[in-house]
Length: 232
Ligand code: MN
Image (cartoon, rainbow, N blue to C red; front, side, top):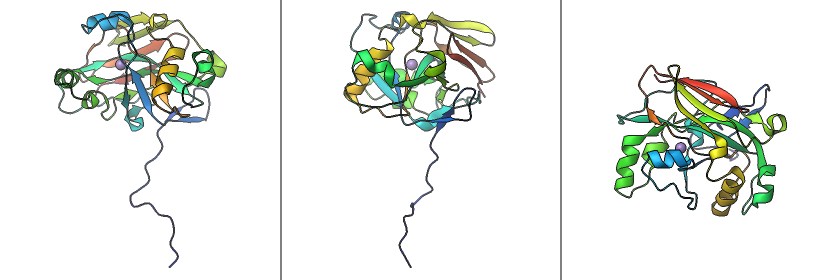
């Protein structure tokens, strides 16, 4: 019998986001997230809002929820928070990318939710342990279709808003980002080799709060897009 290349277990599918108004798919490599990137959110979390070096954590690409799909309430946690975030979709990778041409590496933008098991994240923080279980769980990254930069440009200001059951809970403007998108790409590419298909969740404005089963979350980012998800 000839030896063929076979995988020992079924090959996982590559997660992807639909591209807005297109049949194209945007394949997702990694999901990087920026912590505390809006002053008013840093304050509400009891942290120093002064500009320190940006810090990062990751979610898994297969944590995405697409096409306005449901968000199943995750196990163990009693306190799951919504965090609306502007998402950057990388078209070109690299290391040590300069701030000046960082936006040339961006393929598009999306609206995302960094769903967080806050109680578990807080326990881990207190114990000096990794946040993983609070952040990188199944379905923790609902995300809209990607809007190509070739259509919407590289927006640097606009309303970012999340409603729960029709009521505004988070409201800000992404011109309030402490670390701007080119600076995030510069910092991140100094730590990791960025690849085409990487997503970067850029942080959330104030107003994070707990969700319950049945809640409808409506997300809107001016000039970028919108997304809804229901907690089930
Ligand atoms: Mn976040």
